[in-house]
Image (cartoon, rainbow, N blue to C red; front, side, top):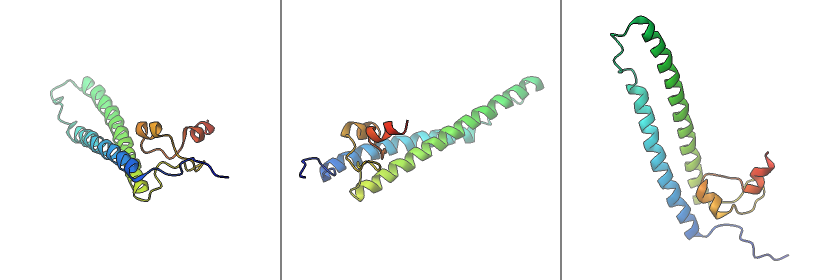
Amino acid sequence: MATNEKTHYSDSELQEFKEIILEKIRIAREELTALTSTLSNSDANGTDDTAGTYKTLEDGSATLEKEQINQLAARQKKFIDNLEAALVRIENKTYGICRETGKLIQKERLKAVPHTTLSIEAKNKQY
């Protein structure tokens, strides 16, 4: 049963994906740094002379905002971890192979979601 279906991406294609991933990691790290610096600087908003009632409301709002920034930072960190795992798969030459079907993930999907390990076919089966 001979087929002409590719089973893996070429070295030049893998290099192209690697460049995309490295750029996404660079941007994600910049965003993570901005989020973490927001967290460390968020106490200096000058509410020391505000009336007590308003300060309580602002404290609640600030706590909620910190929680949201923490969640964003955690998601960004996970995104970076997933991108770095994709780099390992590139080095192992297993990048772009669906972990469910064993088939190549479409190039367009990998360019849009470079850390994915599932083809559209496998992803749709999850729903």
